[in-house]
Length: 118
Image (cartoon, rainbow, N blue to C red; front, side, top):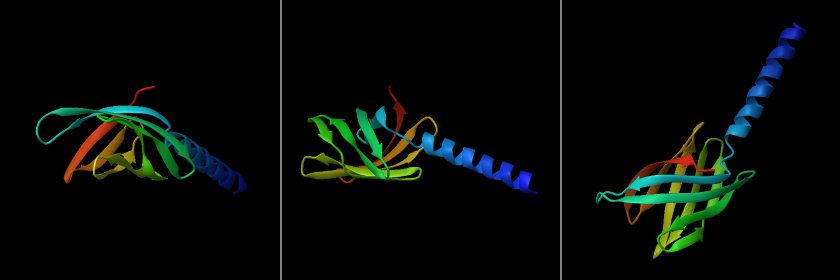
């Protein structure tokens, strides 16, 4: 019985460690945001994760800006990107090989998928 408990605990620990490694989204991510008017907008983010805090930069048409209010909780994350006249709130989900984003920009609800670029 002790051997079975030990093996189960070891397997669970292995899963938790692997899971923790997969949720680190630190690095560069890119994607394409399809705007409702039909044009595409390239997305470029650089993220850094420190515990449950998400920091980094976003490349906007106005240049590179620091993301604000970044948080990460398991597979979910959120942050704001400063834009003229306010913020563009971003929420997302982490997957094994990609990130999905929900962005509110000028009142529009938009979605995009990002891939690691480094």
